[in-house]
Amino acid sequence: MKSIFHYSLLAAGLISAATLTGCKSSSKATKAPTQKTVVKKVQDKGLVILYENDVHCGIDGYAKLAGLRDAIADTAYVAVVSSGDYLQGGTIGAISKGEYIVDIMKSVGYDCVTLGNHEFDYKIPQMKKLLNKLSVPVASANLKDSKTGNLVFLPFVMRQYGAFNVAFIGLTTPTTRYTEEYAFVDEEGNLIYDLSEKEIYDLAQAAALKARSLGAKYVIALTHLGEDKNDLNVDSHGLIANTRGIDVVLDAHTHSVIPTQYVNNKLDMPVLISQTGTKLANVGKLYISKDGKISNELIPTASIKQESARVKHVTDSIKKLSENFTSRRIGTTDYELSILNAKGDQEVRLAETNSGNIVADAFRIVVGSNIGLTNGGGIRTSIKAGEIKMGDVIDMLPYDNYLYEVEVEGSVLAVMLTKCIKDLPYESGDFPQVSGIKFDIDAKAHKVSNIKVLNLQTNNYEPIDMNKVYTVATTDYCITGGGMQGMLKDSKVTKSSVMIYSEALVEYISNHLNGHVGKEYSTTQGRINFINK
Image 1 (cartoon, rainbow, N blue to C red):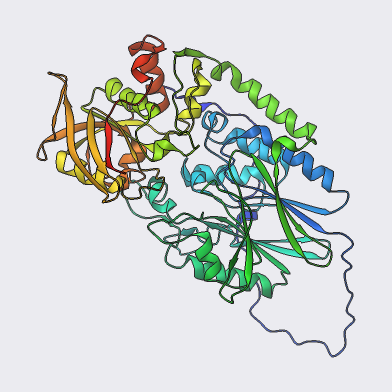
Image 2 (cartoon, one colour):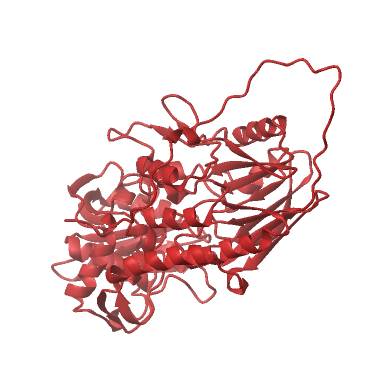
């Protein structure tokens, strides 16, 4: 069966891979001349660095980003950079495996990009292919080839803007090594790439010092680290606290809106940090004046009047190419299938949601398993009440994930559920959305209890049998170590590559619900009960 993800847009050819290899500086000292004439470069205008993060296929903002850049170019030097997560996260990325996004970004014209965790979704060979096509220098100081120990990309990229010599360092959260584990191992499970979790701060420090030694006046870190706590204790604030010589951190990963914040570095000097949110809701504008003063602001993209006709032509063309596919009618829903709560938090990563209910039901019923299970982080957007189109489904479930069925013992399920709720009350992409199973959560003690599994013969929920083997329908992402805390990695596969996970929801709505999502999904169904929140 040909998947929906095999559509692609043919565009310009690949650039040479040589442009992505590192360069070596000479280690030999050179004798200084006895006399020399110093020509001082005059900084006749300031430098503006426009930046974004976590666009996740929010393509409508790119034309305005480029328009703003073009409008500023007459009065200041301008650079455009990205802190990652651009290739995946929406329909346009999903149906082309990132090809359409590269076409759009190439039309914008970037000076440097780094890697987000979702750049690894299509695995590293596809990522390299896409980045070669993008024709933009990639900075990544911590992605290494495990066999050689060499960096895959440049640790930093040097750019000259008039008298401004700027180095962009790139860093990717090392949690990617586990959340997208399938991209880092071969078919036998051997590690082929790594993100240097234990030495990441040292690598960033070495890159900053090297850049300074090569003449960088300003060092800017493009970091896909985030501010939230994680199991590896690596975040953007920790990076600043453990290094010196970095002037600005343009962060990503946590989708935070941080106009301007300061964190003290290793020398107790303040370092500016910012993040723009997600989906190009804002464009970051970092300004370095002629006299070297640094200031920063976030500009709501909706307020930007300028728009690049060239970039808009590309985005409009791609929308038209994909329209025939995404406009296909799947059915209707009487209720919004939501991933958010009233405060705007991603409830799908915190508690049971009706969106999680219908997705997990689709997995269980379409595959024919005892239990349906998905990680909350795999459900990306809500579907509004009204008509459901194919584009809505792919926006909700945009990844290149296939459905599998695995056998899991009850005792393993119990441990897995407990591990997956350990980050409460904070959002976690591993929070389980389930079907055919229900349980209680003590959020303060981080314990799961009263687990019951649906008996398909009696249609009643019965206490889980810790020694019984249950069939579980879930994604390959969850069984290859990416989700569910890696607890399903060693499970026996009974059905493989059943279909793309978004196609399962289409199948469920079309054929099992007869094209109509009704009262059953008006709210949550009591599968996950909090007893101490």
